Length: 419
Image 1 (cartoon, rainbow, N blue to C red):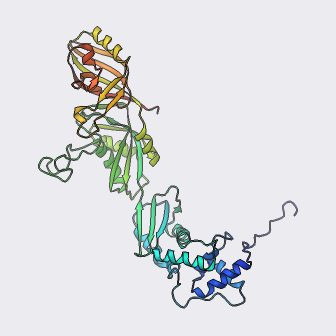
Image 2 (image 1 turned 135 degrees about the horizontal axis):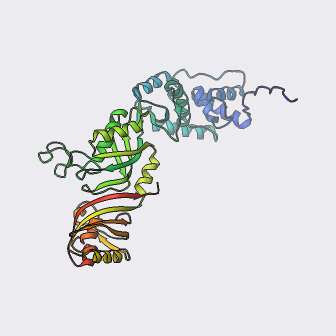
Image 3 (image 1 turned 90 degrees about the vertical axis):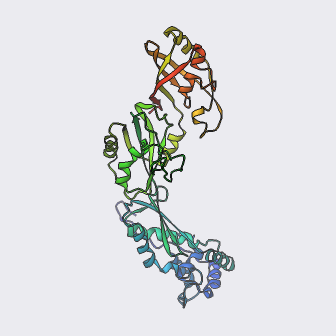
């Protein structure tokens, strides 16, 4: 071949037929298989051929007679491979009104058909057989790509379509859409997530005025509202990198979070605009920063992170500033043991955790009122470190000072997550 000479067109895929293939075909001919199921007996050989083409080549090796067509439904698949004209409209109906770019697909089969397939493989000797489920799923995916104008992507789908063959229906799973960002909470009466009423457990009662909630709103609901409306999702889950107390503000760059939108119908969202809308609609109670589309992996990253945090805490203390500074120096020089605080003991395991105050300083002092800035390890209960929680935290600031300490306010001013 000389330079520039066009390549010869590739021929059909090779499918060598030897004595073993001839014997397989001879045994399979009387079984009443459709071309799809006949060809699947050697379905893992000669990539690039359809199963009906494999069937034709196997039958041709036996002689000039064409492959017989079953007089009724295939004895194995019962005609399932001939019903695409039924299954594809069911799929389009099932995802109607859903924005769809990437999908995965699968199928649910009658166990008797799969058992019958194993029996036939053993009967004819088919070491290279392709299962009916695998062949159906492959062809199902190819046809869905054309019908739905979307890409088959089993590694990162937005929607999963399952053909339930015995039931005759298509089941659709809309996978979550994830939005990550950071929130600032500027209201001391706002919980991070929806808080079901303890009396009725969310069903609605006189105590919660029928709302099913202890608090009327939450960061989750305020952040999620515009995203729910824009996506048509059925609900949300809120994943925060820890949480602050209800009466604590979250300041600084905000707390990292991932908002999970469950079963969204629309995915092409103007995320920054919706984040801004959430802040505006809250009346200044929250701000949403750096919002963007995320993945399920970001949920794991946010939930498993344990960064140090910085706090600003206001205290009432009957002690001079010099003594407080000495106590802070002692506090940062040793570990503290914190038993689960009384205020959360009803919902958390009663454990003793070892934590450390990394840094502490006085930033304001006036007539028994002090404002401290602290940096502490993740999971440190700052209020209990200050007042001692009746001895459940040792050592504590009140004990080091020898006088009672009252916490007036607490703010989280930084999450040191490295972002």
